[in-house]
Image (cartoon, rainbow, N blue to C red):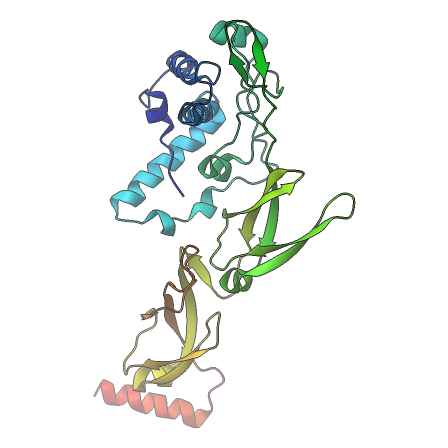
Length: 326
């Protein structure tokens, strides 16, 4: 997922005041406004980015969260972390958290844009925005009303159809389903059903696009991967704890390691201490873009001390202890 530098998009520094942010937004929004750039998809895309940046930086609560995220993101990148391995789930928007979506008042709209058309209908927030703040219902729009794009001529304004709003639906899946890929049967009003395919490798925050499946609009399945009792996931890599007995730790041996496929045997060298981690190459999650490529599985051993020893067994351990301290 691409990190969005909203300060850079608006051309302001991180200490910019509300007035400076508003001024920068007004200047850029006027520059890229679709009414001034008919049939220019690049300008429209810039207009959406500027709108998204203003949506965040003009809202104190969103700006505070974005700044906290940005600080951690910079530390992560400085340490050499890859974007695909970043734990986005820690920052994911939780439904019901109270995040609001700002709308420009009629007075503010008139001050900023004069006679230009409104901005509703050009929401289309990025994956980055929706991961942090949820799915917006349009952009920094005028009273929440959908905007009709117009083409200006010397004699009249020609109306174009309002863009259809995309629809999102959250789907919860297990880690095993994320590993193997899965399907979901979706039912719509009127009884229409479709079977949606969810590819292997998806993670929390991934979106699966179903083109034209929501009354002509695109339907996006927003994926949430449920926690697993044994495995922890970081990007395409998996982490698991493997218990071993004290005898195997001292003398070496083999143990069974669970995977999301079939279990594998791991050779434990003599004198292995608890906390030792072994890398099992290619036994992690499939890569979303290339399912044939898989991450690694990291197995950390935990030595379990035997319980309820007999008197004879305890005597043997005392004998070994005395030998080592002789």
